Image 1 (tube, helix red, strand yellow):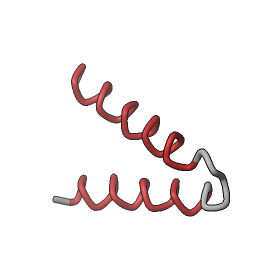
Image 2: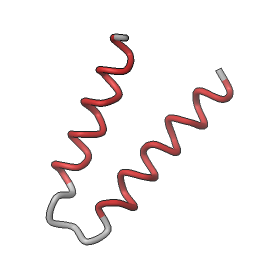
Image 3: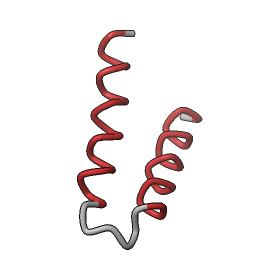
Length: 42
């Protein structure tokens, strides 16, 4: 459960840091993809 909180917090931080960027969804999606690829390997 703690891992989910950490990942969720990281996603919220990404959203906040790209809040004014029209490509914000792409930045967040790329971050989530990178997490998925690491989890698939590990």
